[in-house]
Image (cartoon, rainbow, N blue to C red; front, side):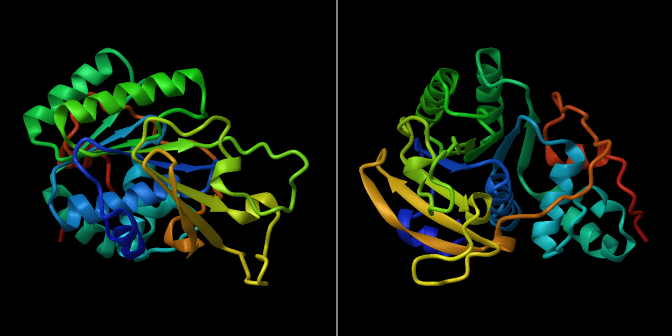
Length: 276
């Protein structure tokens, strides 16, 4: 997986299993997925499918490049246009075009979409699927979609890693350090492993019971075997999983259709760097 403590605790992703990355909005879920895809598809050359539901093409490529190249920025929208990063990003894009990575941007994840993705997975020898994000909250529809995805990966015998927002309404608990169990509106069902990301500053919590500084820190909790086994949380520096984006404005919202191979996506994207 690329994160040593997760490799130790859960041993990686297993065929036919479902791992869910949970967290409140803006807690680093998409960033976690992007770092994983860089490791699995770009570095290890394992055929990988990424299903996007609400991230634009420009933001997706910018985040992939920023994490791989170690670029820290407060303006992810403009990253691809900044001249000081152009050589690093160009070199990364060369690697990315050679990676067996496929990307599909969809607005829903039911019915014909699952059938289409099953054909894509089978015809391209996909070994792992990432979905960002399954639904915006834990609802009845969320449970139906989880069941559908779980059935698909069991049928194809490949791992699925999906992000999903947790419920974060905690009236009366302000200033009390949250745990994954009290951020979920319903029990977490249908998944083999749940990795919870908790950004404490979202809850006005800046130190733990031992006095450790929690500024710019993400707490990680792991639930295994459908919640029956809970593992002690880890603390990660915020920058490991999160890129801030303070720029609002027009974004590239072009949806991807049948052109799902990453090199086709890059060729269709109006990238500002020219080869020497």
